[in-house]
Each structure stands twice: as C-alpha cells, then as structure tokens.
Image (cartoon, rainbow over all chains, first blue to last red; front, top):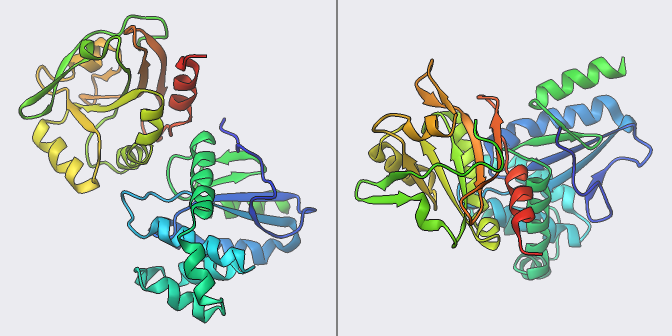
Amino acid sequence: MSTLKPEVNSNDHIQGDDTASVTIVEFGDYQCQFCGDAYPILKEIEETFGRQIRFVFRHFPLANAHQYAVPAALAAEAAGLQGKFWEMHDALFDNQYRLNGDLFDELAETIGLDLERFQQDSISDALREKVENDFDSGVRSGVNGTPSFYVNGTKFDGGVTDLYQMLKESTT
Amino acid sequence: MLEKGTIAPDFELNATPDQKIKLKDFKGKKNVILAFYPADWSPVCSDQMALYNEMLKYFTKHDAQIFGISVDSTWCHLAFEENRKLHFSLLADFEPKGAVAKAYGVYDEKTGTSERALFVIDKEGKIAWSYLSPIAVNPGADGILEALEELDPQ
C-alpha cells in the first residue's frame, strides 16, 4: 500500500482546519482533463463535509504531455506568494477549457494580483523547485496518474466519485 | 517471473526498424529498467509510459536506462512514441512473438501479450528488483526509484 511521502506539512497548500478528521491530498495537473473533471466534485465534497475535511493540493505536471502544465503550476504558486493560491487554483480549473500561455496574466488580474510581481515570481527558480519537489513527492508516494488521491496518508484506489462515495459511507 | 538475484536473460530487440538494442551492451555501464506492458495505445499503459517519460532525469541520475517492451511491432511503437512524445525507446518483442517476455516469465498465453511487469537490472546484469502488477493497474515508479537508490554507490 502506497503512502504519502512526505506527510502533509507547512510547505503544502491546505484548505480546512487541522482538526478535520479526514485529510485528502490530490496530486494534480491543471491541464489534465480528468483533474478538471474532478475539480467540481471535490468542491462538492468540501461543501458537503465542511469542517470534517481538510484538502491539500500538490502539483504533478506531466510536462511532456501537457505544455501548459508546468506554467500553470507556477502561476498557482506565484499567486500563492501573494496569498491567493486557491483563487488561482480555482481560476485555472474554471478556465481549463481555454488554457493557453496568455491566460495566466489575465487570471492574475482578475483575482487582483500585483501583475508585475506575479510575472517575476512565475519565472523564479525557487518556485520551479517547489513544483519539482511536489512532483518528486508524488513519484515517491506511488502516484501513477492524475489525479491521484491520498486519504489520511494512504493512496486511495479510485477516482473522485469513488472517493465521494467512500466518504458518504464512512461519515454516516 | 524471474526474481531478484537471477541473471537477466540477454536479448536483442529492435528499438526502431533499423536499430537493435542488446542487453549485454549495458553490462558494466548502466543499470537497465525493463517495463513490460501489454500493448501500445491502451489507456493504462499510456499513462504508465507518460509517467516514465517525465522521470527520465531521475533515471539518468541513477545511471539507468529505461526501455518499454511489448509484443507490438517497431512501426506501431514508432507511431506510439511520436504520438505520446516519448523520449525513450520501446522495444518490439515481436518475432518470435513474446520470446523475451517468456524468458522473463511474464508472458500471458491467453491474451498473447506480456503482463505488466517491471525489472531493474544492475550493472552486473543481475535482476536487482522485479514486480508484477495487476494488469489493469499502472504500477507507478516508486518501486523502480527505491530499487535504483539501493544500487547507488554508498
């Protein structure tokens, strides 16, 4: 059974409270269609289970297959430096159908980022390294495709609808 | 399937219509990863090869060369490599069909394809790690990476 390596830590982007009984970690790629499909269902999971759920996103960009995967991950991280990781994360999935190289600046403006700073951060080595570290963590945790989910540190064998079903069954 | 400690059976297979890969050529030079998979184009395999494609720098770091192997022909492999932008070679275990898969104990007679199996072969030509995955499950790369790390000079 594959486990999450390293465990959820302060480098992660986390939604929800530390007191939540269930932590879901997604390894995802903003250009991956299956991640795009999973996105609204994950939102629904978060709404349904509220404070019981903590959600973490780590990047697993398949750069050879998806030309915008790494730039999109960098855009999310650059937004994160201005405290708006999740706003960019949501905007990227909401606009996945028209993902292209010009989209990032537009989204940055929409969510109210300092554009110049965003552009500089998007090309920084430190952020590139952060994205690579996420990928590394995915490889070591046994990620075999995107999206891959981990529930309380253990790899979940199934897609997002299986995950939703499992949570419904285990919380009632 | 062949287990850890076994001498890896040598083979000579086409990587392209006019290029052959011999396992013994890597002896003393590189670790070799063999990823047997059932067929080009089937969805799980594709994800699996896409994952390895992203991991080439990891393999290089550990002085390892990866090859995918299936019973598909070189022309089929070429089209698949091009379509998925793969940066490593797929070997054609095509004639006699599945001979290498049989030698490694991972040929499925019923389907006429190889099973989904991974081998890490060290520089002495010995199998350092092997893994048979359920046919529908992409085995990821964590096992390969751990095996390679164990082979690294201390």
